Length: 473
Ligand SMILES: Cc1cc2nc3c(=O)[nH]c(=O)nc-3n(C[C@H](O)[C@H](O)[C@H](O)COP(=O)(O)OP(=O)(O)OC[C@H]3O[C@@H](n4cnc5c(N)ncnc54)[C@H](O)[C@@H]3O)c2cc1C
Image 1: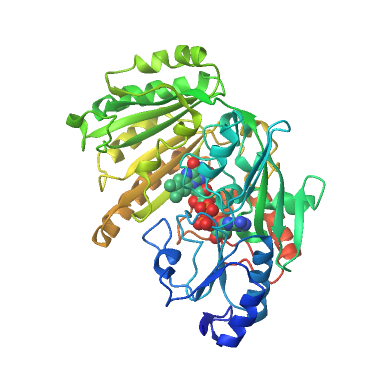
Image 2: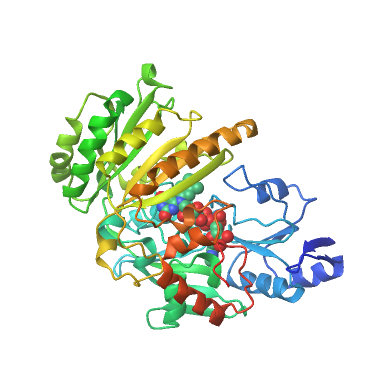
């Protein structure tokens, strides 16, 4: 095939069939162009607000393909993006007119149960890793929605139900295999290329293409106490006021996630509540189930719940409970703050904005993350934000482009109203397309960002990895 690609300098590069044939001779994966049947599916990402048409998608089968793909983009000086699970809200996985280096086929997971570690290739989703580790009653610190890619999540920080116990996902990394800007394959760990290891633990896609991650694993389940309780919105004040105190006294193996939204038509919610405003609290207690039941008893006694599915269940199932709320292909717009805790006045602000939801799928979400991450020094990894207790994510989610303005305005208004309660920090992986330098600085803090910028000059002086939340210059 002949392909046309966007060059880094903004020009266009035409590559004739012979050039592509020569490249494909050294590439084991597939190349998908605009005329191929798989192109439409291949270019689409989770967020339907992103509608980019790359020149070619290179689906890599392993590290050697990633090296070949990177040599290719370097040789022709063309724009490229790196695709893991394609869940990034800003659509960083796909670039307009350039090359997508797609790691999707790289899905190997190897568990060393005795050594309590797992090595996972960069095309894995969270679900792929949980599935293999839970066979051994072990788990890595991963996020809340199973279709999310491990790669983008881990290099941006990562948090989930185990974060209170063990910190950011990237804090639990043992090593990574990475293809650098020079297309060299390096191992990064505390003892090998430690500065690169530091940068990759939160520095997002700026430092290379990680081909596999080695995670520390922790005993979890396989059964845990988990699920959710839901109340009508009328109980929001009582529930959130209770939760702000409750969350400060629970042990680190208990994590809550509060969601303010309209009740979806989910089987666990009674039909008469569907479409009505609710507050739901998801709980994962990864310690003993008996102890967990005692811990959650006061939460259960709060207000008048309309549904309660908090029960003994497999941890792997817990990891999928929020999946249905975040399907691929809707229009999404998020804005996020880290909060030190839930301030009493913030409760009123949240309830006020939850009363004006712009669509049935939009929600205000509070994820509890305090604990282990607060104990580590500020520069332990660039993910930083060691003063954060909760992640607030204001999540606009809707179906029709006609609703774009209304939904995004609601998100922005709630985000602005919550600014006084923020630590000032934010999560790099929740930044949308338009958020730039000031928000990148908020995600890392001045000092970690300065160190990242210096390492960027060392490992990627030409800013090859620019289709990222870019920290160069
Ligand atoms: C529904 C949903 C739920 C989420 N839940 C959580 C959560 O619970 N916890 C949490 O921490 N985050 C969560 N996130 C945010 C998530 O961490 C980011 O969206 C992340 O970018 C997803 O990774 P991905 O591999 O799917 O990203 P992609 O969109 O594939 O890639 C995004 C960017 O990550 C970088 N990248 C990807 N692969 C590599 C690689 N192999 N090497 C180097 N850089 C790479 C590149 O810059 C790339 O452009 C969620 C996102 C969504 C959409």
